[in-house]
Picture (tube, rainbow, N blue to C red):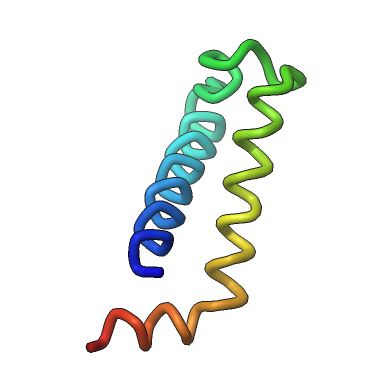
Length: 69
């Protein structure tokens, strides 16, 4: 499960950096790489990042306990 936690954290950082680029420069890196905001691959990436955020929210305490040991 620790490897899943790491993958989720990496994807959340990527999502956060993408939002930072959108906020500062109006540049959506995910959309640029995968063919626009409405492209299927972009939507998949956005959905995966959203699922990762939900995972972190719901399992926050369990994740903390896993990493304490």
